[in-house]
Image 1 (cartoon, rainbow, N blue to C red):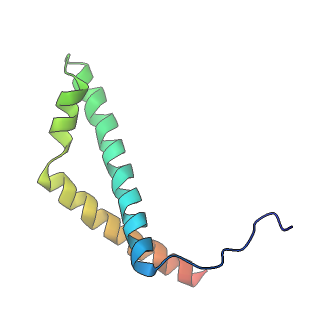
Image 2: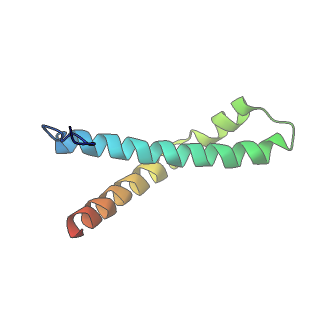
Length: 81
């Protein structure tokens, strides 16, 4: 048996786009939360305050645009290799 069995089918391109964009958005928000929580914890503020501070429409727009750009760049690099 080979060490890595071949997948019989690849995910639909739209499903792959959604998964990859969601993962990039998750990484964006986790990084933003770590920075916000570290900065606000020194002032005695809580995790709830940090969560409330990062989940804004502007941050979501930045995350979505960045994720779509990241997806396009990685798809380009996949095709080049």
